[in-house]
Amino acid sequence: MKVTEIIAQAKESGKPRFSFELLPPLKGDGLNKIYQAIDSLMPYNPAFINVTSHREEMKYVERPDGLIERHVVRRRPGTTGVCAAIRQKYGIEVVPHVICGGMSKYDIEDLLIDLDFLGIQNVLALRGDAMPGTNRFVPNKDGHAHSDALVRQISAMNKGEFIDGEPNTSHCTDFCIGVAGYPEKHIEAPNYLTDLGYLKQKIDAGAEYIATQISYSTEQILRFRDRCSEIGINVPILPGLKPFATKTQLNVLPQTFAVVLPQLLVDKVQACKDNDEVKKVGIEWGIKQGEELLREGFPVLHFYTMTRTQQVSEIVKALM
Image (cartoon, rainbow, N blue to C red):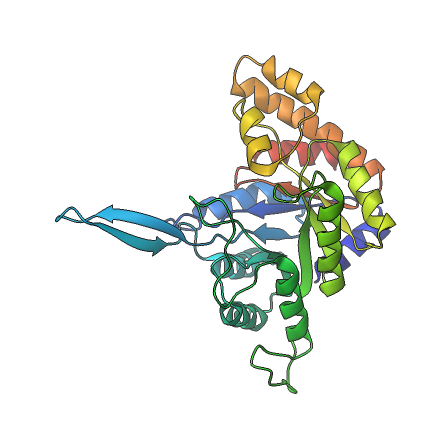
C-alpha cells in the first residue's frame, strides 16, 4: 500500500497512526537490532517503516611503508536488503531512502528497478549529505545535484521512461514519492521563503507527500503547513518527531539540523541532573507535542528513532 493511501485511511478512520525511521546496521552487524527495534514497536501497529540510506565515506589507512591509502567505504550499506527483510518478516510497508549523494543516474535507475522487482512501492527521495569531512555537497559526475531532479527521474520511470531515452512499453514502476520538508528551513537555504520555493519544485516534479525534518515546536510545524498551503503545496505532511535524550543534544541538534529549540524545553533539559531525567523530559515533551499535532488534524506522526525505540514506544503508547 502506498504511503498516501495509508495517510488517507488514517484520516478517514480518525484513528492516529505512527511511522518510524530506522538505520541499517553497521557493516558487519546482522539484523538482530533491527528486529528487536521493530518487535518493540509492533504493539503500536506501525503504519510503515523508513530505512535510511548512507553515502560513501573516505577511510585513510597507513601502509607499512608510511604512505597513506585512501579507501571508499560505506559504514551502513544494505538499505534495500533491510527493507526486503522487514517486509518478508513482518509484512509492514517499507520506505527506503533514495539519495543523490554518491549515486549516478544510472545507479539510481538500477536501484529503482531492484525495488520494483521486490514489490516496494514507496520511496523517500533525498539529496543526501555532503561527503563527510567536506563543507558542501558535490554530486556524482553523472548524478543529481538536487532532489527535485531525483524526483523527476523517479516520476519518469513511473511513466516507463529510462535514462537512455528508450521507452518501456511493457512495464512501468508505480512508486509513491516522498520528499523532505524543513519547518525551520534547510541548513543550507538562505532563508525560509527560498527553502519553501525549493520544496514547491519537488512537489511540482512529482512528489506526493512530505516528511518533515525534526522540530520541537508545534507552532513552527503549523506555520510550515500553512505556508505550504499558501504557495499551492497541498500534499499530505508527516510531522517528524524525535525524543530529546541527552544534554549534549542542546548543542548537537541545532548545529546538525538547524532546529531552534523552544526555551521551555531548553530550561527543562538544563534543569535535569542526568540523562535519565532528560529522557523523561523527552517523553513528556513528545507526548505533549504529539497530542497537539493530532488535535490539529495530522493523521500520521513520523518518529526518528535512530533504532533506539524505548522513548518512542512510551510516547506512542500514551498517544494511542
